[in-house]
Length: 223
Length: 223
Image (cartoon, rainbow over all chains, first blue to last red; front, side, top):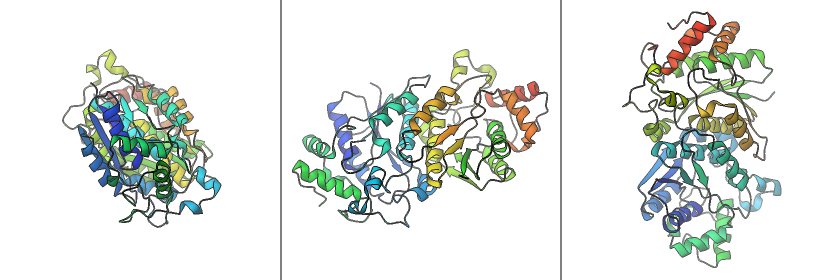
């Protein structure tokens, strides 16, 4: 069977995804792909490495695109060390449709690189962990985005690569529930955008995670 | 006026493009963007720097994505130092529709990064030098590719970025003619895929350049 590529950030969604792909789908060897793009929460990459090993992948690459963070630092608090990550509570309604933690065009960049990697190793399927955000939205995590990136990739004259996002309509609470069913070790995931030694609990990403575990009626081992 | 982003490889097409955008279009400050992606012909980046200066850009960045070359080395002779670049004459008809010098999904990766950069600096227009290849074709240099990448980018909820390829229907000979009209210093461009100290004259890229100058009735200062 052809290899498949799984984008693995080390967060809750992609960590659950890789175990979902491994156990629930009938696919070939997994090639996990992570990125250092200058994110201040680069400790997520340790979690990614742990999850890749737990999912028994054939290969795990961490691609260095640090320059991407430099290039886009004006556009995001995630890659700009000089600007603080805001609390979710402090975001206005308009900020929630595209909050300051958004990194300009990041998902298209990462998926484009994943598609290149897939093409080079003979894979035609890419999995990524986009989910239906509960608290705020990113344009590059939607079904429209998915449909249009696949329309673009379909033009390839060799075997076209397809991006799959099995969680795109799932709420985060459902992902926590699914992860628990799959036995995902949530203690080896990383979510906090602030990148400190412990999760802050109040940044947009932590707040969303906290709510998801609460809604699922499960304890978060990182608490 | 808003800044604009110009992809600049240092080859014939993008070098002509940047002077075309500067002199023929009514646009704001130019931000040139080049990439080191592990290409064996990285001497093109010296040409890019020279052309950026000649076009009086506001900024020129060379982004390091060397890991991209490593990740895709199995898929292209341009980023794999262990495989020789073939002569154009040796390519079969099927290879000409997608030759071994194709780099998997490279243009989508570079344009995605350019779109991120544009978004971060407040630009909404990106220019790139895709042209109608005379001798062989790449799926990611077509009008269909351009239309679909713009349909994808249009989903952005902030100001959407648009990719423009003013030469997409031009033959290379027409670009040489236009470059000569604009006074482009062709001695400061680089085309050869083999990356030696002098142009080889027979790789697919050199062969195409040679034919273009010949058809335009102009001498190539690199000959």
